[in-house]
Length: 150
Image (cartoon, rainbow, N blue to C red; front, side, top):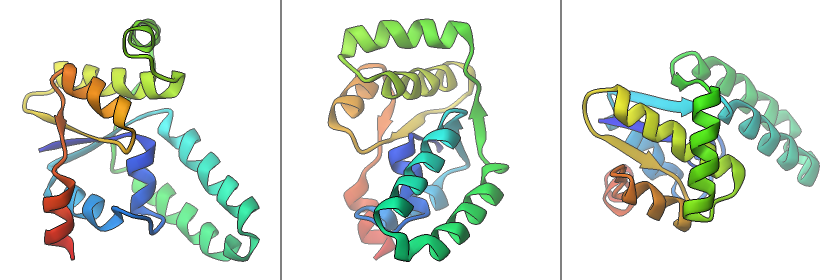
């Protein structure tokens, strides 16, 4: 399985949240884990925000950032191009998505057209998940993964 993670799914691999164990299970089942290049900025921003909100977690968050930096090299990355952002603009209108959600969706759609095999789309936004399904991306069975990982 090719697993595309938007940032909401990716961050669950590094910060313990609801569905973190299911995401780890999905990564273990995947032959390829892919992200959009913008996930780097979104993830670092999320970690920085968490550090501002919970300063007592700063030492832990620095270790999390180091782990993320190390793992980043192993992810297949979809690059942001002019064609991708133009398509993302269309998807933003069609599916009523926020800007970066639309870029994430478009990146997964590009991956689906360029790589053989099915692409599973991991995200934790209902509107984005529905748009992904309309485009033929497979949703993760989070409940099944959560049971396996528990």
